[in-house]
Image (cartoon, rainbow over the protein chains, first blue to last red):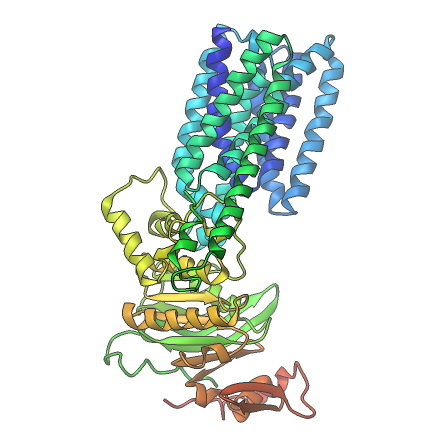
Length: 284
Length: 289
């Protein structure tokens, strides 16, 4: 149980961090495809009786490379879908070779967070550190090209190389998180928490920190609830991610309508230059 | 053929122009998009890059930026041919759409103009904050500095992107169709701002547009592109029936209406007669200083 808290916390930090850029860059489909594709690697590893983490990592990177490579030859969504389809096909094949396929598949899809063992702690921590370092290194170019990719390009940021590096971040995050929370849950964590955070916080730094905080809160609440009520962790992670997003949207809508209301108030100089209406954006 | 336009009168003799485009040609997908384009802009000068869709405006801007290789010719920034990437050039892209949910304030985007291409996490510093504030003030964007960029109006977003492009003090500022989606009032404001920035910051400003009219009051020079060729000079030298007819390769009329200029195809005018131009060029297009 203590392991579940620790590992769950680490997973959430990574999901909140990488997910922040996933949402900013509109790469949700890639963040869905890489974990689901890596599932094939895990299934292959079970079949060959080798380290599951190695299989996951290899296929996550393979998926990322496939999306990146096909992505500048075809539309990004088509490239992503093709990569996913290929990997899922392989996954189905590998699963058919293993004797006890159903439980293995289930644990890969939804994770076994309550059964995390001590020897999973060190590799998770190592991969997490690598992932944090990579995101910190790429922070400014990622942010700039997420706002407008042309702005990055004229500053000499190679668009394709950056995209590949970011897909590698997703692959790293996938490798460490899938054994713990499964392919489905890492996806909902990577999207729900950052999408909610950007509604509340208007600056990149604050939104990033809030994204991590929301992800950690979701995971810990989900573990506690699952333990108490004896229901699957995945159910709570999914529902809480959705709830966080819904609250974020409601807040953004309220903020928007209150900004419009105060913009309509009689202004001191009557024009759009009035600081009162500008202040009502309150973007921070 | 098109002559290299002289540097502005107030640039002292002997100093290199801020931007010099010399005999540039470009091929895109096997098609010759630019033919022997030459012009120069001095510090403090504002020029319009005028032409219809497909005239080669964006290609020319990409060549100046170093994002697209020219097949022949040289581009010099402050007298020097840049490497693969033009470092002394600021750029505001065409038709951008910013997500209103983006957690990035106007001031964050301007700050990314300082070091957005560097690796690692930026350390907050007073110098950085003051630099951003000064730049926001220069483009008159202080009052919406803390709003999310995606929630700003088109004209406000233009200002923020101009500040982003100028914060590293480039010699040249390029804007690709900045007036395309603006209402009349924002159009005037942006043009007036660019004219003021060109003067105050001593930069050469090149603005691409399909309509010459919004730029008329501010323009020192016009680069008129048609079929990949350019006519260069002062507005009254270039926007004339003889010059543009030759450039287009068929007869066009230039009408003046309440201070506005309207270029229309004349009777019997046919598009795509570049051959005529190839035979005729070299006479009327000669633009004298």
